[in-house]
Length: 100
Image (tube, rainbow, N blue to C red; front, side, top):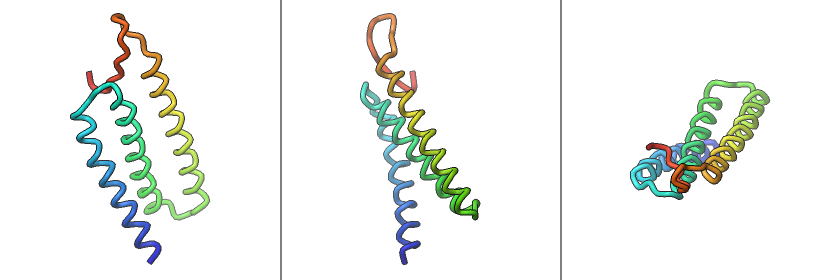
């Protein structure tokens, strides 16, 4: 029963993050790029976690890949945040948008 609940939780989380990406893209303001990047990276992480659970059968290997993926995600979030905060525009505005 625990495995079924965990699978349902991952399925639901994947659908929620996918559904929340659409309004975040459509309603873009200054604060949404950081939220959009976090949602996108979380969606990617949950998807890759499911792929690894299905196809990598050695648990130690799967756990190491997931640890490295989490570290990589934190590094990417840090760089996106720093880019958004310290980006300098010629007009002096700090507008960090994904889609121009």
